Length: 592
Image 1: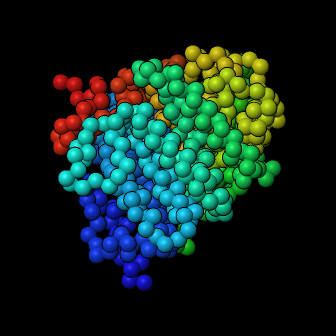
Image 2: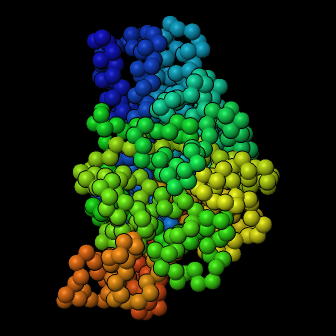
Image 3: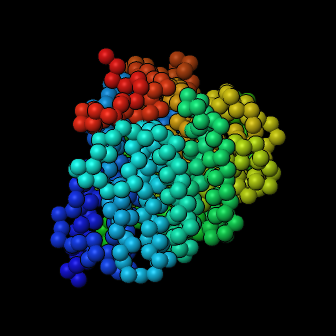
């Protein structure tokens, strides 16, 4: 027992304290002692699961949200974050940069250099090595996603190793190594599906491969500055084949109990993840007192909540499968009416009329902080209002879902130009069927709204619909910023932030249709305000109505986002450049 306690201590110290590649654990165990049998390997590998993205918000300097899986949507063209984002609005330098940490990698490499010592069958040893290489592939995917070229380290470094201060390796070398790792994981991890969506199997590795390869294939295709377009299709084919193998295994399916008003949101508010669809989740549990704070983040508490733009909400189809934006005057429909008879995911993603908390109260969008646009994100919030201010949520958070795998397959096929009606029926149609859309057939014309507002260069109907579906199905799950970057669509982040339609300045509006007014848009607060009404200030340099005294709410008029091409690659931290003279800053950063 003493040995296992010490081994846990070693693993946790590597995870939490070692940020440098040359730090060794201060312990008395030799590798032969620490990796003697299968229990030792399993215990060590379990420490890697701390790398699964967390759902806990961490606020850094200047209010920047760090290390939060759900909050990828603050760097997002679909949402409004009620704070200044220095990456977009100016002031961000290499002194603010984060993410150049390597402690997790050293933990993995230490295992991979020593696991073979264990006196167990090779097949079992390779299972644990496969899990380690799964996490190394994920680790490096995240690094390349953030910085572009990074140094590849496939070994444990000592303080005397010259590679400790080497330059960055080419993207091609790193990503080929990532591919080798994830392929080893697929070939060697056992194929036992996790009933709790909490452990890694072959199927998890296939799903991650589809994500990684779709990313790399599209990044190479659209980022012509890399001169790697000739290899893009190979990566797209890897994505397609990985997704296809998982789909044909029939291990997973879309969570659909024929309850379109509930099935989608169930995935995001359940303590026990529905493992028919969720492949991997970060587990939270009230009984074990393992919590995060998503409900408070997305509710009326605090000041950092993102809310969605009208530009995005307009992309949700009507319940009959027709396009909302094809109807005349769609931008002058008031909130309580525009949310009716839509794709059922809309009412499970934002607060719409009829949404009630667990205490029976009918909750309107909280425009004071959580919904400056009027479109209040609901998706990950639990319904108990007491959790708003407690900082407690215990719904487990999906990290990899089967729905994403279907979208990865569909996008890879659409990018390759091989997408068929059968592919549609196996992917997009299933997601829309779960959402209660009656006509799930592939459209025959390109959506002019999507082309005008989002992707002017896209002419493929299936590719346009896949991009629509990806934004809707994966809303608030942290994918959007990476999607924009791999498509080289960063300029979307510069677009105007808009909200609900306001029919008249000063009019009392009932956004949740409960017979009582919720909000009025005013230039000055009245001397005798109506109880329960939030008076939203406009014409103050931050917000206004598009037509003066009526119109679409326009927000963040005082901020001027800029996303030049150099921002596709984050800056290396200033301190790392100082410590390692062989590292060169990504172009465009720290200009004099």
